[in-house]
Amino acid sequence: MSGTTTAAALRRRAAGAGANRWVVLVVLCVSLLLVAVDATVLHVAVPAVTEDLKPGAVELLWIVDAYPLVCASLLILFGTLGDRVGRRRVLLLGYTLFGVASAMAAFADDAHLLIVARALLGVGGAMIMPATLSILRQVFPDRRERALAIGVWSAVAAVGAAVGPLLGGFLLEHFWWGSVFLVNIPLMLVSLPVGRILLPESKGDGEGPWDVVGALTAAAGLFAVVLGVKRLGAGELGAATLLPLAAGAVLLVLFVRRQRRRTHPLLDLRMFSRPAFSTSVGCIVLAMLALVGLELIAAQYLQLVLGLSPLETGLRLVPLTFAAMAAGLAGARMLRRFGPRRMVSLGFCLTAGAVVLLTAMGGEDNAPLLLGGFVLLGFGLETTLFGAYESMLSEAPQDQAGGAAAIGETSYQLGAGIGIALLGSVMNAAYAPGLSQVPGVPASASAAAAHSLGEAYEVAARLGGPAGEALRLAARHSFVHGLHVTLLVSAGLLLAGAAMALRLPRLMHCDPEETPSGPASGASPARAGSTALSGPESATSPGQAPSAPASGTTSEASPAPDLGDIPNRMPAQRESRGSGVKV
Image 1 (cartoon, rainbow, N blue to C red):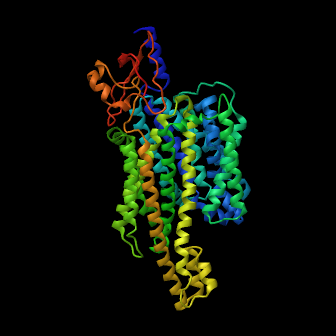
Image 2: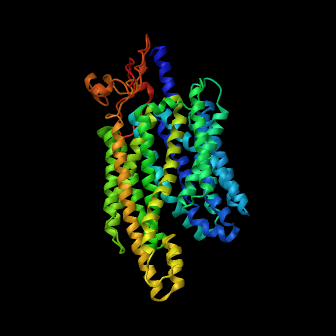
Image 3: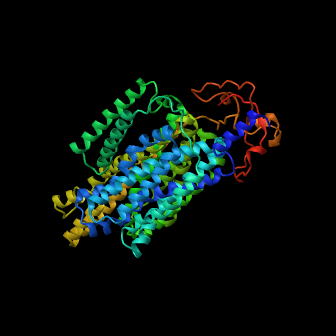
């Protein structure tokens, strides 16, 4: 083996191209699982926290919202910092802070300390989330293997979102509310040394100083926008909502202008000029907009209309999670077969079909209908998110992987917030008119009942008699009507997403330096060249120039991996080949 080829092998091993890259994936998935679980585990503990700490209404709101607010606002800051100082370093610091903050939250004896702990958990989560994706981008240079890794990563995210409430409910039955945070500590104590030993360090080119002012401007702008969107989702339209939205928009505009002027920007905004990247970000926002809004409304329907208990409601939503897991694990094969364009469009269309199917829901329980609708919904949305994340991450330059991952996660958070605000507003607009003229119900009672179905039930209980029963029935009927209208609006948004996805590449492009070829693969050169490349689109990705062939050097290429059988080969077993056109 020549010196050049040996150096190439060492570079690939340092990047995680050896057998240990799958162990690295396990470590990254454990990190993501902790963050995903912590985002939802507190929901079931809110009554116990309220009874113990006696927080006021504003304090309780901040206990719940401090984590997602801080996490969403700091994703870009820590994503780009990881590109500069080292992604593993930021990830391990995130582990440490997450563990310390979990201990603070578990033993907090007043509401203010719990709010501070939740905010620190958000800081730790913002360090961990983009780092997992950017390290994944580094250790899986072959796009087809990376697609499989992202599928596993996204399946774990789906599991975490579902496990949070179930784990919280189990812990609350046996321990005090602080146990929902304490469970993080042993996992972090294991993750820290394992991550330090196994995770490779990686960073960007490091040219120029890190833009501290730009990072803080982006963080402040995102915090204000997310805060405003959350208040909008709660139905508040006053100055406390509009001012943060306006201030956040101004700060983000200033951030964009600053980045365009700088020689070494914090984020290379030219990534958005690539249709595949900008379209993928838009698809993530639309998919999350539909998912979070629909899950929120579905939970209310199951509990308030059908009368299911919280545990029964969680069990009804489990098929959605399992379907999302299945889509994540099958995503790599679907991406190879259909390509990003058809895969993401198909996911949106499948989700729209599921949403239209669910409009058949009425005032009575229809378990088979809900099962079929939730399975299609989970599979379709995860298919969409998988294709969008994979395309976005593959389109971004490797030295900008942290920033790209942060943009994707920020889009995820913003889509969730906008979904609650938008679909919640549609739901309220369709629900309230049905309660304006209920026979025998005073106007003041009707106005109070129009706020929500839960409040309508409380007003009906106070009224009692025929008037209370009439209000209760009218509220249930209006809620089901509002649900149907909201579902149809969601279907329209999803179909718009399917049309947007048509801007994605038709084929899954792979770098020839990372694409299998040569005698060791058992394929002819023609076949090797057509595995992931076909037609004129195989020349270059949009907005990307061909790379110059290396002169007098050789670079190694991975053998064709069977995505159903995880490869376990050392770099020395791979054939070397010349570099080619980068696509």
